[in-house]
Image (cartoon, one colour):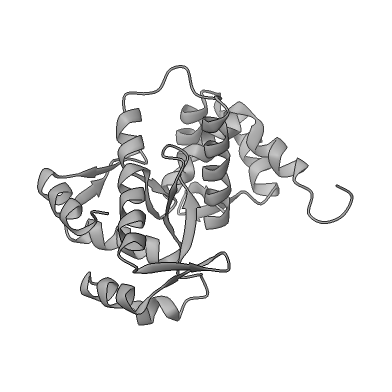
Length: 226
């Protein structure tokens, strides 16, 4: 491809095993220290520093300084969506980890994809809303219908506040573990915030997993059944 954006530099940055582990660790939206990311990548602090410099120079992560500490996070939601799609292709083509961690079933059931709900529960939310005609697709773009607006407001989501943001309201993000779509965009993030605020679930510490309580999962199932 001689014209347009060059994907080779980005692919090379994300394709290194150590850097891939670092990027995956940042997929839960939190900022982590170089030491924490070195541990995730299984490399020394010096090697981690070199990898982080390359990722920052390539625009995939940004550094944040707070007091004497320096933290790193993904440069934006588009980076998280790119990584989620790459994970989907890897799963479809059989490039899977040979030793999934103990939290692997939890990650597949419900996890954070940057700032919105992914995994089995995220797909259920998306399917239920499309099945109830609360979300509709037109010319490849997803929108919230009038019925969806009523539902979202009743769930406690401030749509007026979301409309004031520059971020798209609705986006469909291909889920790597389910190989179907979950809801992204500012609306997807707002639904996850509301679910956590209601006490239906909590985010696992140092993991992308979202842990539903038994009562929270029951309430979720009643509301988002397709």
